[in-house]
Amino acid sequence: MNDDAISPGPRRATAEGEEALVRRLRERDREAFGVLVERHSGSLLRVAQNLVRDRMVAEEVVQETWLGALTGIDSFEARSSLRTWLIQIVLNKART
Image (cartoon, rainbow, N blue to C red; front, side):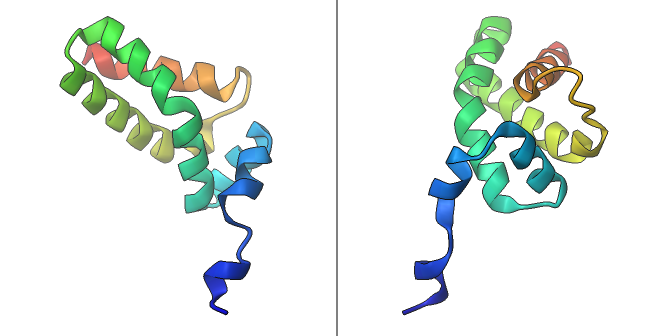
């Protein structure tokens, strides 16, 4: 039996609350990042497409949003939801 077979895997993370995922993301946990991407990318892409009207550009905006979120996660103060914070990043990236 290999180590992958006994790891908690994504099921544990998908049941986790946003606060725990943010904490894990601050610790640079890749699994937490993957869960957040799965949870939020669809809505971020819809927002981006409404702003830029070109799907390829919208996808780039979402990618840049995730990069911005990774570099800025330590400054996320949770005064709003993570989703709201991510949408604000999309808005800022789409404007540029």
